[in-house]
Image 1 (cartoon, one colour):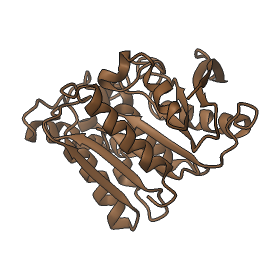
Image 2: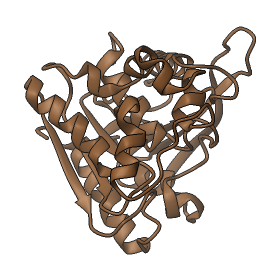
Image 3: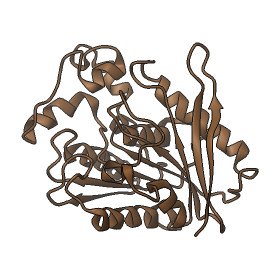
Image 4: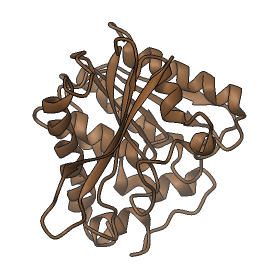
Length: 269
């Protein structure tokens, strides 16, 4: 399938910060959905050009391949934690969503179905957008290995056999601008698990059983909160996979991508 790419489309100019852009990949046929894609990187690094894990350097790119499956992919930048503190990142996602709602038809994406897909830190952003943005209007959300409960993250890492960071250099502390343990209120305000509600869209979580950087307990925490609230959530564990699924070869990663696309595009998920 032919894919048209619109690159470096500026969607927001936050006062005092760099302009923020997105890249939009549109299939030549009718798009099954418009997907907001949010990259990972611990909120500290990364860009809209980054596909997930080993798919980062694929040719054709991860985004072109997903668009080839019929999903228009809007991969967007957001301010990193070295630039701005929470909730600036969520505000950037909201700005991109508003921009796309106004420009989707001129850009060739008339489908009303809107979904979100986030990996790692981007999964936290996708979940927060789905649960906290008043006009998100998402039909489905896919999160790959997301942090969902920032206050519990270090403890979950310890229990999974990793080493949880608790000081000011921890990823989540840099996002919030203060150590999580000293400001639990800030951690709660950035934790999707605290905002589960019955009107949430269906969620699919994919998480490796060997992930010690963001353990699978984080996906399970949010999925449990969503189902307890009356929403739909599914956790699918990838046996033996660590964070970013580095153990998976291209065919195995492709299967997870296809599973994610099928979930995002299903009329009943």
